[in-house]
Amino acid sequence: MGREILILAINDLQVTQKERSHLFHTLQLISPRPDYYKLERIDLQEILEQIPVLLRKGDLLAELPDFSGLYFTAHELEPLWGALQRYNFLPEEEAKLENFFNLAFKHQILATLHNFINRNWNSPYAKLACAVYITLGEIIPWAKHPFIRRLLAVSYQEAKTMKNANKNAK
Image 1 (cartoon, rainbow, N blue to C red):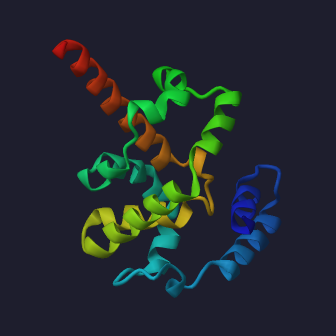
Image 2: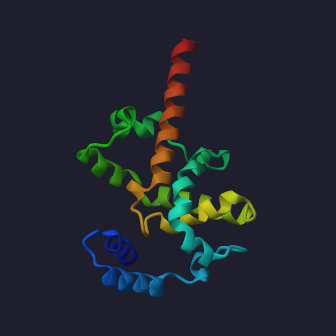
């Protein structure tokens, strides 16, 4: 949580350049050591330096077959269905979204990302997965993370397709 606050403060336009420099230095001091993440064959320092660039495409991971086991069913998505149809979350739906992710689901996502990184360490997607893994819930809240939002959108599209297929089969 401390790192998340520092990142928000660094990006605040009201913070002076001198304060921003001090905050960035503090952020580097509290950045976790590579052994914290237990990632094999990955240059964590390189990932940390490239996080903003990597996160621009990190949400695309949600569409890879490796992550299809994380997709939600139509029944699971029911509390969020209206927001997903609109592709927009109202403030009260944002609160629902925060509560949507239980500890078991968070663990499953992190474990899937971790396994993907260690299995595909030489793939260009490994760096993207590392950036997602490092920022998920640490720097960017779960409900607001682009990877999670894309995972929800892909799940919604899959669930909608299944619903339509079941309707047409009857």
